[in-house]
Image 1 (cartoon, one colour):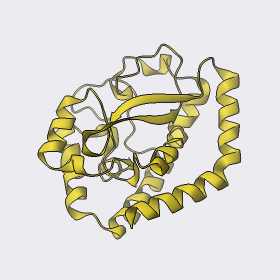
Image 2 (spheres, helix red, strand yellow):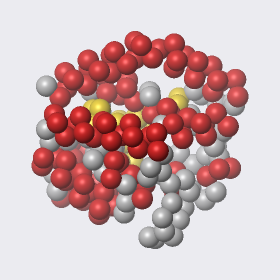
Image 3 (tube, one colour):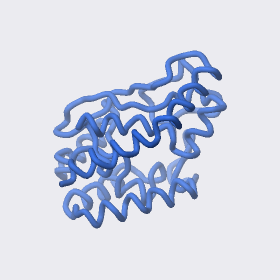
Image 4 (tube, one colour):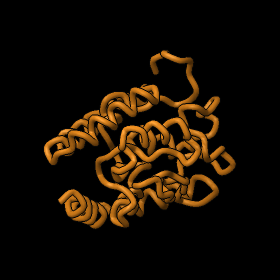
Length: 196
């Protein structure tokens, strides 16, 4: 049922949103050199690797395997169009294709970078790796970049143990509200415990 919901919703959004996405493609191409899409190695269901898709928001040459919130002076890497895409989370739209392919779900633990060994280990310890990673998740609506890894995994564990259609709908609604309020987004390296 969860997989069917993913396919139906993503297909509808892709069809309706195609003209808008084409405009974003054109803006990215006209305002900075490089590919339209950004591909990054991530860990998926059962620790299988895949490439997550995003609209490119940074200049070519930016370190690609470092979480943005750990970059020194990330503003120097972000393109003008990319700044808008990141603030509105529109850069995540291409992940709809990851969902249709079955690599991701609308809701689930956000896929770890292939080199985030601490996060991957904890998720395996608590059985979170058995879930298909999501476009959004319980940890994302409860802090996102502000969460330390052990806390993030606890939210992921809660989701894995308490999944329901109702919980997915709640997370999707909270995601929309968080995107509008830009809640929990941290750009650049910060000191431990410092609020963004």
